[in-house]
Image: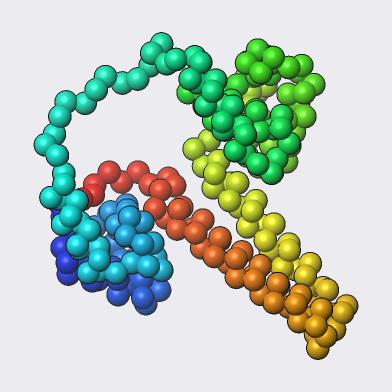
Length: 236
């Protein structure tokens, strides 16, 4: 497969493929490029609905001019070099911003998200959060219910695990919620009458939630095609 920078002609092929509704894999096949290259190119230049070949070419040329000379990579960060107070402050900030879920569930999720292993036991969580196992159980139960974490058996202990696709799963929860709203509001149209002011208002709301859920589902699929499980390393 060819390597190096995409050409303007290749970017035009990508734009035409998106316009014709081709999947990333098919566009990549026509170019003779890895799918990851095509996915990253589209993601950094407006996404599947906003990609423009000329704009993408100008952006690539601008990045090339700004690209600095290579420098030695810094040593990998280790937990020993982390400031415990800064870590705790970040966990508190993350918990605060995780709106829409019970406080304990948000605290558990923040702990899991900031752990290097991505998994913790009840004992780990009670020690970090200074709360009872019963409180941890309530938070874990909520996160399991909406599909953000899973349980794994480790000998006699249970471990609660979060993976790299946690935000994809969270997005799916939101998508299902939008679909439920659309279905619920459509019921109201039949009850109140489509030709009444209230029915018209509900029909407009239903169309809004339908469109929103469709866009969210497309965005999730775009993420999957671009990042999830993609082991290709070749690119620009």
